[in-house]
Image (tube, rainbow, N blue to C red; front, side, top):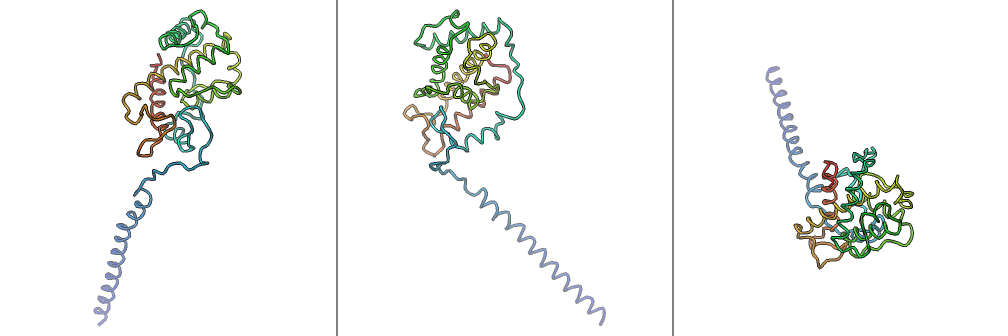
Length: 245
């Protein structure tokens, strides 16, 4: 009788264990599915609501806070660690080569003002602002440099484009100075490289429609800034690999 009871008890325990295993298996099968459905079942493609923009920027109209944040975290364009500029900014031959590139780009693309290698040796702030506005206009033709606080606007634009080296506000007032111009002209040459990459991507990306204005959206709701960001990242990668000329 004891053995029979023991077997019955053992059988009962086995039945309970079997039930627990079955329940556990059910949980293992069901829980992730439910979880995944909520997290990954449908990606939100909703358009940004009014008031969500972090602030107004100069390229492509307005930038949503999500776009700006994702560029920093996803692509690592900006970080807390300062990057040492590998370019020979104190090499006169290198700077002259950059000035030549700048001059050729301006002349070859219909710059409306007189420009020469001589005038670009030490340009005035006024001339620099005209040059910057002209080059940046290839990204957004409707762009107009604000009448005030250009010393904040221009460094901010370079930063948002992915330029890895900071430009100070004070440098905007002394662009033609011997200690400042090498930093400025190399930044302008980098911007020209961005223009060339942008033009190439615009030709190959069907989402960029000439009939759409800056800051518009494609039919599927994707903001143009996403494509713009992608080419900025590629430009940054080319630059860091030494292909900045």
